[in-house]
Figure 1 (cartoon, rainbow, N blue to C red):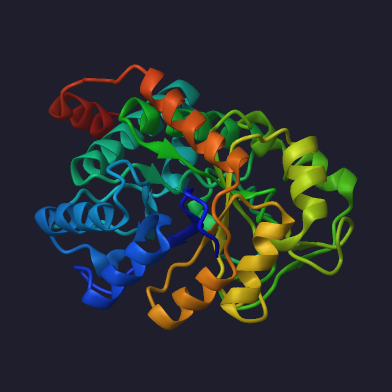
Figure 2: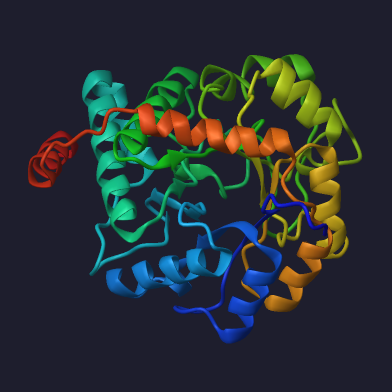
Length: 341
């Protein structure tokens, strides 16, 4: 770590529904870029709002990014009774097969309603949509989190979701770049290795990300693409990040790692963080909220590079320019229900 005035290139989690004194002191000392929330952190709207504000006070930045995974279906950290149960992405893919226009509208409205809930809590970044194309023989970890298994469907619905989130004043994060859909293992538990050729990957897996490369944030995949780098997953591979994500796909926005606490990666959290940043990730994500692990991750992090800071600023300017959709919530909700019948 250094005394650079930019925040530390780390997004942290926390253990509970409020910050402990140790967490406050630690966050104030290291000044992480932002905070990511999970179900363990979210009990009531008032409590989540207070937690978000407390974190921002610790880092002395009222606009510090606060993230969450609110995909809908089996991955949503905000749940009833205080928050809406959003449909799974697969539900919109089903609708698309019969009526693409209605599916696009439904995906947009669903994302808009999600963004409204997040904005009320002070959450500014949603780690969605999933743009992976799941293959039949792949692990089920992606499964119904994907918008079907057809390229055009995924691109169309992914774009609608991004538009809906931004119209609700929340930044989307496309994931898991450059594609997790062929993985035959769950990267939460082990390191997947994809043996497909560069030609096959370029024609399929990379395509959704290429089509949505203008989206300002993306999350890397903890997956080895043997044809490109047989030794390192995308998150820690300068070859994948520079030659594929930045050049071939053309993504120029904020690149965050997937959770470095996942078992797909090896070594200490310090080592994982250092390797991710050296490879070209802008920011490292650590999710467990375990203070010992966070301290290790922080030791492997540097302050945000100037280019990373500019990418964040660019994303905020883009969001500020986006026209807010002020459709009354009741109307949006009723229309969504009608479309999903």
